[in-house]
Amino acid sequence: MAAGSSNNLSHASALTRITCFVHALTEDGRPLADTRFSVEQAEGPVPELMYVTDRTGIARLGLPPGRVVLRFFPADGPAGTAEFSVGGEPGRTYEVRITRRR
Image (cartoon, rainbow, N blue to C red; front, side, top):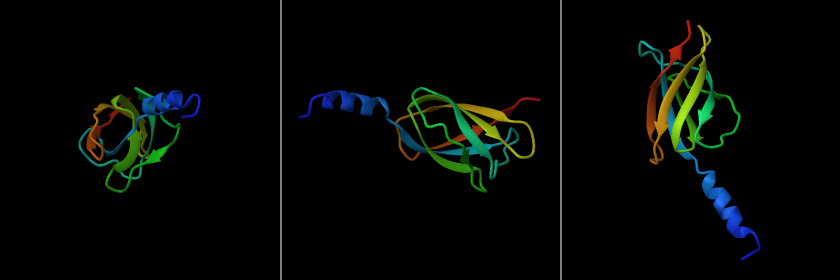
């Protein structure tokens, strides 16, 4: 085993991400189609990327387990956020409703 390899393993386990799906909905339950969003807060490091939902409001991404806050930027109005907790189940779909600032 190379020197320092145990540190690399510890570091890798700290970067665990769960592949999941987010189904983004408006406050009244309509899908947020083709909407950009980013991860505003997470319980671990995530890349600073902009994601986009598909026409049904679904997007696939990798998130660390724990509390997550996403910020959505819909074309038809003000930005909004959604908060939820990611469990350890890969492939799960989290249905979230955004709360928009008025």
